[in-house]
Image (cartoon, rainbow, N blue to C red; front, side, top):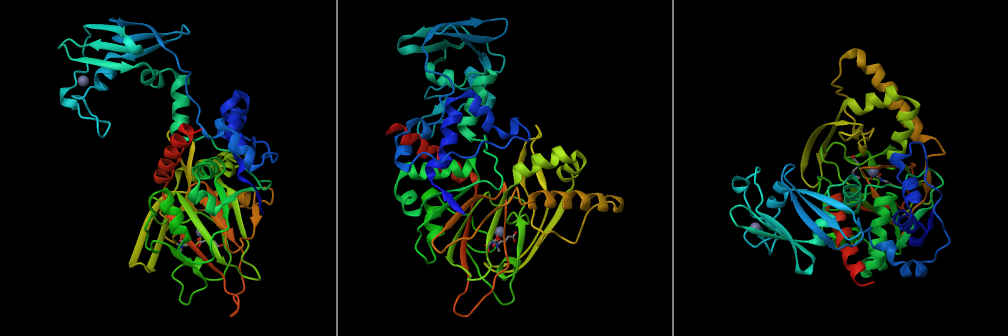
Length: 449
Ligand code: OGA
Ligand code: NM2
Ligand code: ZN
Ligand code: ZN
């Protein structure tokens, strides 16, 4: 059911910024097995508007002025002492590399123009001092001078805590894991198009929760493209700039039939699968066509806990996917993907699973085939448990926006009648563009509130 309003999903973001305890609770990755508290439903969207801290991001470290700066010659670092008595260390090499002067930085692009061939990674330092306006000035042995703003330095402090909070501010990887009890966050299509605060709330929830339903879109084609334009641009694939999910003759994809689609991510046949998708319900089937979603990252956590061996198999076995046909143009795709992508620290990054495009080619020694099927089947069993699946039926005018790297989605089969045909229009985007818009909105909304 499309139930909760923007206010309901936005609150966890507020709490995670204001309370270390709440923040921890929401860091599902750090508290294995713990589903975040149910999303609170008490705030109205008006109240939400008043919550400035909700849409501003955490300031990694409170504003401080510099009390003192000195060179630690032995360690070859500058030590900055802040007004609160805390200190930060900055290696000489890093300071020289990041000189902000017009010779070293192209001001108009805020880009480094200092070349690696001109960087002495063994540089010493002539002098360092705190100068007016709270800046740190460094004179290098060749008399080149760098001036660093204190806020700029503080943001880039190398302590574990400062790095963690800056990385969280930049990438928002702190997810709110959900199960079947989720009330899918909703917002107004018109509002996110025209109101920056609403657009920011939408994208924050899309990142944190993984899905948001926008309501009230005109029941005609072109709306997912408008929404993509609000962000930047959409992702073209072989299925076109946007694609029409309808029951088609000679369908080039299982999605273009009226059959059931089991829980899947879209397009694992692409090595870089689309990060985000928008699906607009233009018309719905009278019978069937209901949707379902699950939180894939949460399911990985359950799998790892329940069956570490199956988890190891799915994070270490490459599976072939294939897709061929003709649409935007003719295509014959082959890819090799882990069903569960984890990064070097073992954190889940992406789910790659579509049973329809999983290739019959299976590039495994024969004795690994059965263990692989056991693991894949278990993963599918876990994600299909009623306690994990969120069910809903899209209504005309709804646009589901969701994280295609994290969520798996499916639909029930439906009945096509001449008078009542089902039609969804979809579009893909990538997370880079969505996160870019999110950061810009956060900066501008923050400035104006
Ligand atoms: C798809 C898809 C959902 C639906 O086209 O890949 O998941 O409800 N469609 O038809
Ligand atoms: N469509 C909906 O992986 C897939 O083939 C997902 C993509 C056809 C664009 C379906
Ligand atoms: Zn310089
Ligand atoms: Zn799909």
